[in-house]
Image (cartoon, rainbow, N blue to C red; front, top):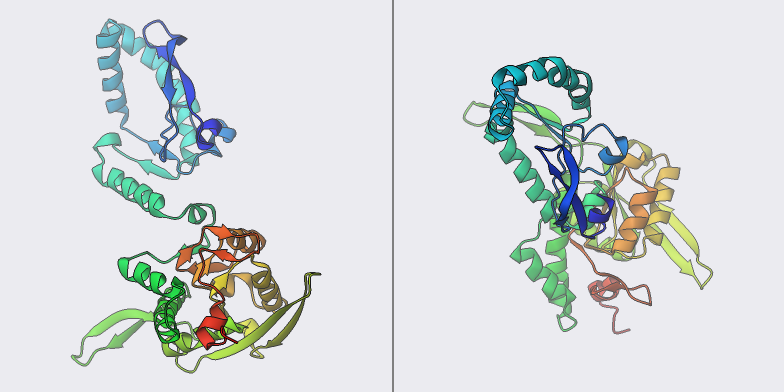
Length: 354
């Protein structure tokens, strides 16, 4: 399993059901793939094997069905008579199932009753796997990373703002559109409460009420480009600011902050359009936590994220949420995001020609 997870092919010993012999030549070659199904009646027994599984499924069946299958298999494939099969089943098979196999049911993430006849359960599992396969690899590693679903509209806007020949007006226009989508997606991760209202027709509508204790914090200067979208979505929202400046080559950072006095009681949307190395983000998050903001109350919003930055932030702060519109290829030798979109603040505020 470890070799398959690393992308290496393995040879699996063949088992002769009639002679009860393993390592029957030739072995079966299994190549690595996106979905690997590992099956066996005692597959959940070894914790080392369980730890290698992304999803653990226990396929259950009625005792009568299990017995009927056993009788059919042993009489047809092994040539046994029914009396012998029943004797072995009652003395060895059934007690072994109850003592060693059934207890491992507690380790399963999903239990499927009625086995292969349960088409609804199978369809749900297939849909879940398809969803996981469609996610970026980092989303499979970090459950607190959310990449908004890519569409032709989003890809088109990314193409425009990444183009070095795009005018300032178009860059701002399409950046604002993308930022609005990221902000809306980020707001969807805030806690909500159920609420009922009466419509103009006199009917009752059961909906939800927005989180009241909310504020934004922008990382100066690029993060300020995301403030208008946040204000458009959240009327009257308080917005604080953090300035992080790298001083020379010694890596020291000077931090200026102006935050709401009651920020520790609020959910915080941290705004910075580009997540590169993650160093600035770590400093900003540490500052918020030092002000009493619970880690789980921070949602970090950005347009693009480098894998290196995602790794740094998610490992140091596993309870915050990161919402982004695209994951980049990485960083170049100058620690700039590639393919990237250049110096976002300069392009957005029109200072790239200075």
